[in-house]
Amino acid sequence: MLDRLYARVRAHAAGPNAPFFLAFLAFCEASFFPLPPETLLVPMVLANRAKAWRYAAIATLASVAGGVLGWYIGAFLLEVIARPIVHFYHADATLAALQEKFRAWGVWIILIKGLTPVPYKFVTIASGAAHFALLPFIAASLVTRAARFFLVAGLLRHFGAPIETFIEKRLPLVCGVFALALVGGVIALAYL
Image 1 (cartoon, one colour):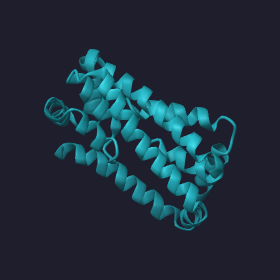
Image 2: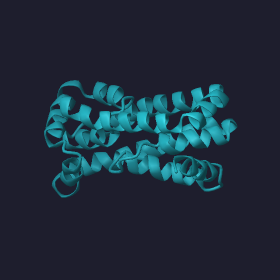
Image 3: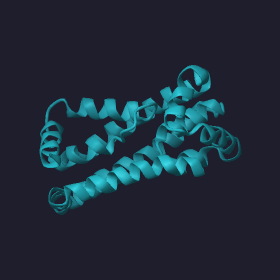
């Protein structure tokens, strides 16, 4: 079953609409959606390594744009939209803690948390809820999201064939590790 799903994702990742879907996924993940952009970025780069930098740039810009939406949700729609999102992840206390950390650490929170498996949507919503200045938020988001996506794209571009072979041979292990990282990021929110 995983092999068929992977083959299907891989076929779509090589399609002409893949960059649009990558941008859409990166935008949504930065403000409300649970799946990270790497779920599409990885197969896209493996399907066409010559476009690795382009795909990383698309993911970066769309993620930052989605982050701005997350910032606005936190700043102006906290009770209406942000609380249900945060409550869905059982991270109500974490949001309050992140707001306090933004007041104390500001840009450093964005730079550090944007690289980790901690869902980026919490960083964006908390920065808006803390009324962190929007321009430094955008600048720090560009740095941290670019670092993350360009690192992934660069590694895949350089080591693509061995990584692709590893993924294909050990797909259940890769999916399990990915799921653990995703769940671990959400659990880590409780201890921020």
